[in-house]
Length: 446
Ligand SMILES: [Zn+2]
Image (cartoon, rainbow, N blue to C red; front, top):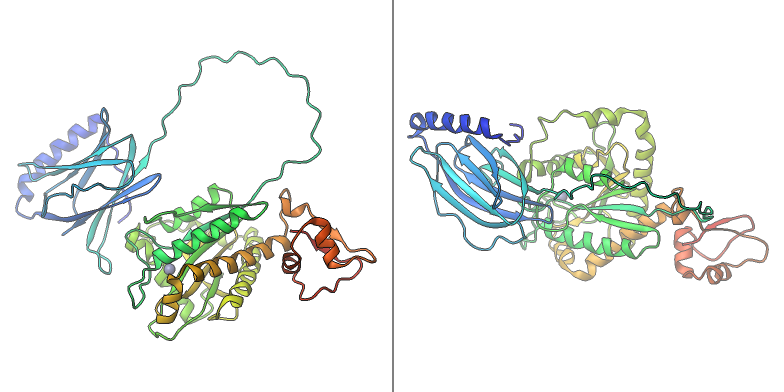
């Protein structure tokens, strides 16, 4: 079933209420039960998940003054009273309910500010049964526009500035899973969603420090973000790279090492990759919305030739990241893997997915939990990202600005000194093993 957006205008609302009233006596004997409610607060979106014994017909509408959201569930009752504890976040103030004689369960959400509700039902999946999901998105408060603006006097023409304004390279960092969807779980109970968020935050910190680059966190807390939403978020921020961070799991506890994936054109490159892609794509069935009923427009876009450049960029970045990861630990596959991950289906943003290690391997699980190792993994990814963008400097960014052409008598350490950069970094971004350079070589200056 597809997500339904229920936002009922007043007139329709009255009719619907009447309709529910008429239906109620008929259904009074087959009552659906609400077993529990979970709340996942996030900065801009708060999610409520109602665990149901069966799918329930429902209506959602908003009331103002004070701000409230009302959820009416036909032919439903509470199995336990609603939680009264603090819900975290600054949106949800309280939860109230009223069992109506008509069989309609009314749940009222008291809000701190206006929010737009979106609701959908999820079918049973794995440990979860039927669920009703309510996503509350903060409504922007519109500032009143001044009615008329006095024409501004023309200012004396400014002499054009010679240095063009440089833009930052935007790295979208996507911590996999979250909220309802824990991802893979290690033998000690470590949840993938937690360790990948920690690694993502470390990476964001490193990107932040990098001259000419800026991180965007796709998920920055314990809540679920749909796979398509992750793509859209990256595109909205005009990301130059999308990097999705995960931790692998396999039935065999000895499986170990990191893998880096890009989207496959046709079919996955191996059976294991196909299996993994299936598993990661199931995320939306656990934590979000079903992918099946969405028109696969993006899949069509993928076939477009214009995609080629972004796929090449994905592959080259993936190779650079894999090389970086190889330096801090074992790699599971020596080559970049291809698989049909939904989250990599951006038509225009180069996208890679990193399985940092096997959480199912007891040793690697321990490592994944350690702050030290999380930093090493983040640093390895940063090295790969840096290497890719220094080799392929995007026009209009800082990295496109600084190059040095070697002339007779130049030495690497002199060049480093001249530009005030670290000698090791200079070697790294230029892929130099030693200090040998020759006249005419173009060095990228970090
Ligand atoms: Zn995962």
